[in-house]
Length: 334
Image 1: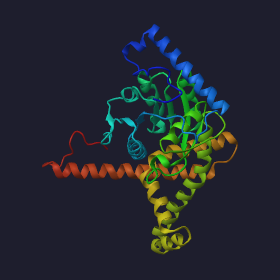
Image 2: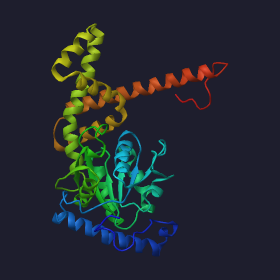
Image 3: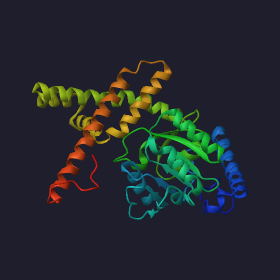
Image 4: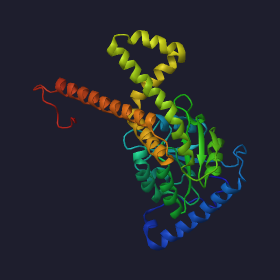
């Protein structure tokens, strides 16, 4: 259990009766006391991230894509019980496979939400029935600050300790060791829990959304550079000098960085479109013309459409190969 946050016996998390008026009030009351303790300790800074005084025995991972799976593997290696849920991706070997967000959260000390920005709020709402009193809920999705703030309000209303976590480097190859910034009422507690599991978490001052804003400001530079690479190489291709241009750019930034900027943009175009849309919105709120952020968003949106068209063509080709009449099957989608 999460030492210092769970009092007495840990609840096994929200059964059906928790929706009843009386049960709901009692549960929120318990959660509220634990969440207030987390917020109080977070504000006072009484938990040092290096102390390792907060240890999670059960961690729920919501979203088992590239990032969720990489972090999940490291958590398993750390010896904790990992309960995973993803509506599309199967749980890793060694994980406790579950059939819903709420089931994944049952009995968890720490919840890591690694869905997408689009799904973050729905995942939180779906998790609530399974959240135990004293649980720490960390949203690691890249999103606008206002979404993080909205989640923090929803969590506070339900007596759940919440923190905004921004992952500041690509997760593949780093996993749980990916540098993270953590803000919000439960930032200190969440950072301590992550650090005790081998994480690399830094607490910053400010409410939920502060970490997200820092990441988005940084994304303007990195995703802007990636957009410049994509645009430059496509121009080189059209001009008949792509090979020369690749060598020229690689001479300055290295082949690995060039490939990562180009292929990462293509592979993660849909998620990064949301990220740069949020960055564009943030810059507008700050009174900064979002020229680079908006251009990056638009390039990523184009790459997303190209990816979808490619998948649709591949699906159509597969259906044609399997169907004697050459007609696509009923499950084929455009």
